[in-house]
Image 1 (cartoon, rainbow, N blue to C red):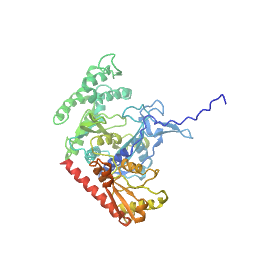
Image 2 (image 1 turned 90 degrees about the horizontal axis):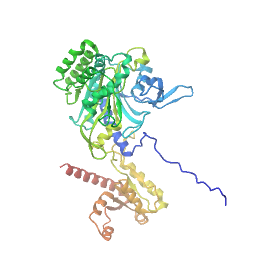
Image 3 (image 1 turned 90 degrees about the vertical axis):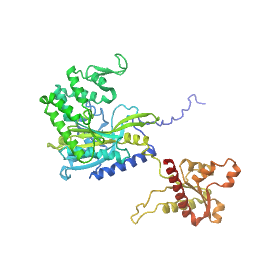
Image 4 (image 1 turned 30 degrees about the vertical axis):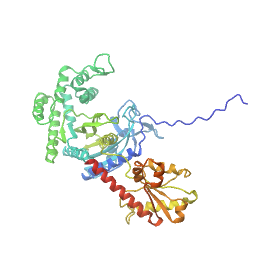
Amino acid sequence: MSDKKQKKPQKLKARLARGFPDRSSADIRATDEMMAKIRTVYERFGFEPVETPFIEYTDALGKFLPDQDRPNEGVFSFQDDDDQWLSLRYDLTAPLARHVAENFNDIQLPYRTYRAGWVFRNEKPGPGRFRQFMQFDADIVGAPGVQADAEMCMMMADTMEALGIPRGDYVIRVNNRKVLDGVMEAIGLGGEESAGKRLTVLRAIDKLDKFGTEGVKLLLGPGRWDGGKEGEGDFTPGAGLGSWQIETIIRFVSIPRGAAMGEKVADFLESTADKSTLLQDGFAELGKISETVRASGYDSDRILIDPSVVRGLEYYTGPVYEAELLGGIPNEKGQIVQFGSVGGGGRYDGLVSRFMGQPVPATGFSIGVSRLMTALKNLGKLSGEAANGPVLVTIMDRDRIGDYAKMAQELRTALNPVDENNQPLGPTIPVELFQGNPKDFPKQLRYADRRGSPIAIIQGGNEKEAGHVIVKDLIEGKRIAETITDNAEWREAKAGEHLVDEADLVLTVKRVLAEQASDAAIDAANKEG
């Protein structure tokens, strides 16, 4: 015997890369259902689809990368064989800017387009924070007036309602980067040299809902301890502003929404307008947006001017807006939570211009698909469940596979009619031929139950010889089974089974499916009643 033990080959460990989620069939169905509704709204406003690749030249993504220290910080990057840097896109807006610039002579402006796709962030993953996620964007390129921004806000509101979110349970909040930049100018933070501090200030304002006024004051000043006291928890360095600068910002973000807003804005402008024309321009644009949406029938319960809206990306140059879900929404644990923003965007007049050497105005918004889908599922607006489990053709005799396959194909054809162009005339009714080990027949029925099959088709040798087939109504059988406790009685009842001639198979299956649908509708009506 050899002294060396024979080492068994190690099995490859199945593991998911951090921050890259698998998706279940339920999630995919729910996402597809949601995106179809969103697409309908976009096209109602005259938007058309376009698609850009996952990978762009890194310099095309621009200076707006999440981290600029090196190309693959913030984004996933690699070098091509010609030594040029390529990156996975981190959003859908920068690739659109490249697409417009590259095809500028062939594009009809204003260019109204939508697209959906995966985006990638090379950052630390965490609970609910992924490195790969899906966005669904809509943009107008070549429209300089803020009426385009107003229209985007109206489309966002219509999208929320098309998804089943009633009026009063969402709001589109609108601000203007010119206003925010004007406030920065007014407190002495204008110019390129203050860019880093301005970003710190904007991030602090963005925490207003989370930390409240006092927490934001700390972030604008010396910094904030997570535990509430010095030395407790993690410390977030502040912007280091003086007291008068902090008070000016707090006074700005505290401007009330609604009827009293105009008066408070006038007071704020009176005290700061001599220091910044950006403030005047920004508030004037917000006024035009408000006038446009109100004239179109969108009241403040749907679209609301809100000075505390910030938006994180640096490329915004004008109005910014975000869609927020109001009220409590159950999470996966059944706890009621405030869900917050599910999408947003704004005007980015400088992004296309980088390639063109001439001004090209643009505005658009992005919906966080996974986040919104989760909210809708938790609200019961999306189920993600298949409309029908498969009608299962079982196998009793292994030497008659051809007969069973023919039976399955006849049912597929009959239950899923198409028009002269081979397009479906109704919802899909799946039919499946059992492909597992047919030796254990009860296992086939257990499989049908797990798949949610409404019907099982059974034909053994005796049925074949007599020209019969059994259509087993699994839903009715399950209902009858709940009332029977004796095995002999169960066998005698043959719950839900219909013995029919082979020629009547299709008609019987159609009849049973129709009866199941009718019973389900009655049950649903009774629950609502």
